[in-house]
Amino acid sequence: MIKSTTDSLQIIAALVTASVLTASCSGSREDVRVSFCKSLVTTQVESPSSVRWTGVETQPRGHSGLSVVLGFEADGVGRSRQATCHYRYNAVEDTALTLSDPLSVYSTSPETMTIDGESLSRPALARAVKQAMISQGKAMIDRAEQGIEDAAAMARDRLGSGDGN
Image (tube, rainbow, N blue to C red; front, top):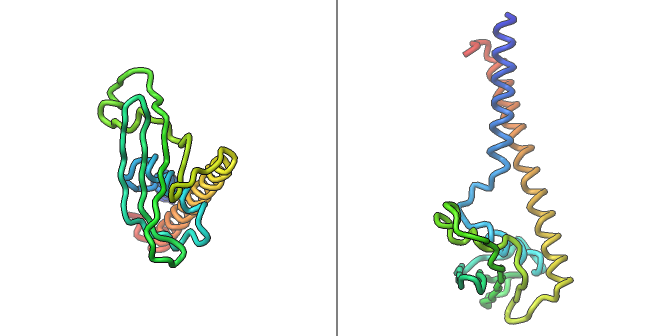
């Protein structure tokens, strides 16, 4: 009985750890700069859940920086809109990472942003960055909580089944 309990506790610990680690990753293959620019856009529209992405383009310009151009529709209005986030070049030298992921040479927070040709002021961009980071943090915590709940339910089912395997 003690061996079975120890094994069960190890299984529970492994499931919880795996769930938390899995939940903390977004699972998206999208570059972090594109994802963050999208998050910034959602802070600037009246109804963030209404945003529908219609296009994504990354425009790396070497030491001159990177532009992420997003096409979108929002707030139930069918007109096309455009947001552009400009990221500063941020690499000292080429590394294996920068050679395998060319966008990694750019900072992860934009230095400027425009929506429909209108530039956000520095304070407005700072507020948008803060809101986007808070939203992303809350989403990560929600995914972790769900992962823990799923792992606990799986462990309860496994312990309750009595088969021990």
